[in-house]
Amino acid sequence: MTDAAIIDQAAAKADFFVEQDKFTVRNLDFYYGAFHALTGISVGIKEHHITAFIGPSGCGKSTFLRTLNRMNDLIPGTKVTGKVLLDSQDVYAPGVDPVDLRRRVGMIFQQPNPFPMSVYDNVAFGLRLQGKRKKADLDDLVRDSLERANLWKEVKDILDRNGLALSGGQQQRLCIARTLATDPEVLLMDEPCSAIDPTSVQRIEDLMAKLKDEYTIAIVTHNMQQAARVSDFTAFFLQEEVGEPAVLVEYGRTATIFTNPDDKRTEDYITGRFG
Amino acid sequence: MAPKARTVSNTLAMTLLWTSAIVTVGVLFALIAYVFINGIAQISLDFIFGYPRGLHAEGGIWPTIVASVYVTGLAMLIVTPIGILAAVYLSEYARQGRMVKAIRFAADSLAAIPSIVLGLFGLALFVEALGIGFSVLSGALALAFLMLPIVMRTTEEAIRAVPRYIRWGSYGLGATKWQTVSRVVLPAAAPRVLTGLILATGRAVGETAVVIYTMGTMINTPVTPLDPGRSMTVHLYLLSTEGINLQAAYGTALLLMVMILGFNLTARLIVRRSRRLSE
Image (cartoon, rainbow over all chains, first blue to last red):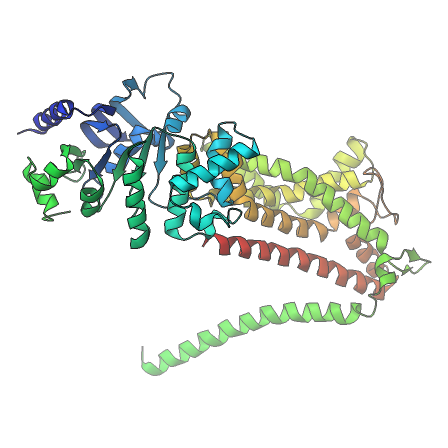
């Protein structure tokens, strides 16, 4: 089967699911300058579910994640073709302000990146951007966000301490709280657990399970066990030849992908034969 | 190489390295000790807070301390916004290309201009052409030229040292470019920017050639920015070259060194504290 046929099949399958798409991606190609990084990506990201992107290093899964909230716009010389629809509205259409898009589609990064300011100010940052200034409102929202990120108990007495003084796992949950505070519809998580300790990983996974009722979550992960544990849907990316663009090999329910994948390459990757 | 030759070359290299290290540190200590020994007898409350009296400038040096602090403070007020805005523009907004390289090169060249030339320029432009006269303002404007490249380049480096992923965090929350720069990048860069400002201030406090041409040599306590004044460095220069009062010259030198040392220690402290936090 050719790649194009596989993609069509994946797209057809994506349409078949009864779950509602939050994001629908059609035939996306991505370029870093002259380097063609991704080709023919078609996938749906289901509302109120967790979708995991897996694949070996350098297969473009983080790049793909960043096309969803146009973070790649910040890298000079990048180009996107194809369609990325958020609630059936094209996010690359002229007139769409990436700033507005990013308020709806929050992002958690691999490296916990609290701002060098107090815990409180970190969480209030996005709220202040949205023009919320009243102390009492901010207090409530900061507390609420920290509670939802399972961090309140640990930081309630040190809200004025610098966010960088927290442990790595706490910093990551602070970043999640900071994003939740701005009330996004989607959370994009780019390997959120790869730079923190195992206990914190557990906490963040528990948190994700709790959050998916309210949010749509897409997570890039290196860790297949993590993908199997937390996600409802899984997309497997692969760059088969160096210098060639990566493709979406297979997309489906996580249980199916991990137990009975359609594609030989998915099976080889899942069973640890490469990657 | 034979083992013996190797041992010899090794010993030779070590000796050379040690000697240069000892010479460097030794010169510094000798200098400080010399000024300290000669100046410490002078230091008293009256010397710091008193006025010069009589033909031999007995008494204190208070007006010169005021003039020095005044002119440096004013120069800092002038240079801080300009230097920081220029750096923000160059590192965040300008299209990186030949123009930006040219501006950086110009800033580096400005830093390399001998200070006495800057003084002469200040005399021609501010004192005479613009008619401001010998004054704290003329001195501050000329000193701003001296400080600008330092402040600009350290700010640029401070901004560049802010990790990309911290900016991304801000953009990811739906911040605009200006919001990211003003609320995240600049606060994150602030400790290093402050360090640059303090180092530039240290340079300016110790500067003689620029201020002698622009602020004059009159011993008075400047009140408005248009008053002339004599900086500590100029006072020191006049007392010693004209052999008026060498003791007072050493006392002034000691105070000046303590002030500059204070600036540098503050700068180091800020850097160390911020580094500890970010690690």
